[in-house]
Image 1 (cartoon, one colour):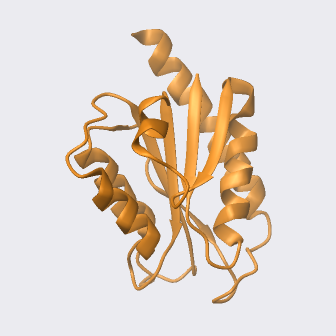
Image 2 (tube, rainbow, N blue to C red):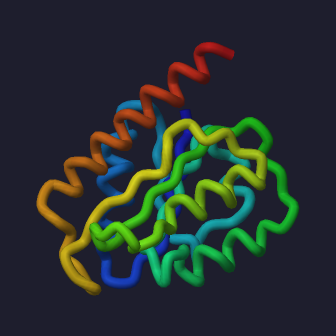
Image 3 (spheres, rainbow, N blue to C red):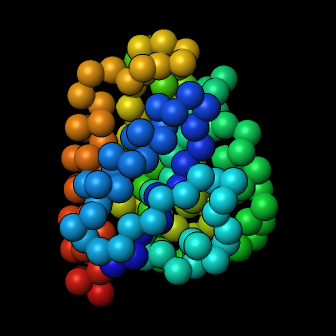
Length: 154
């Protein structure tokens, strides 16, 4: 299985989560990690699983993340597996970039295989709350199992 983990980060927290997710996915095949500013449509085409994440900004995904999805236009990735994650404050009204990313992926035809996941920071610039990278590795491992079982069921 080929997996692409794409993300945006401002203060490095989302990058740490993306790397931890990639470690959790490592046993399931080839994993590539890229920032949205480095990724292209062909990267998504060649992946069996796409995991996309962004910090939450004003209840939404970051600008580079929005620009990436807008640039894909009407591209179709029908049936490919995907999941979304974000980093944010652990507050009820913090919003969720992951929810919006998940909807953007669905509009492009991706099959969402796991509910959007949030990882929490302590302050505007971080750091991540204790054990969030461990949770991210577990999230990656769960995605590997889910994607693997769906691929073998085809």
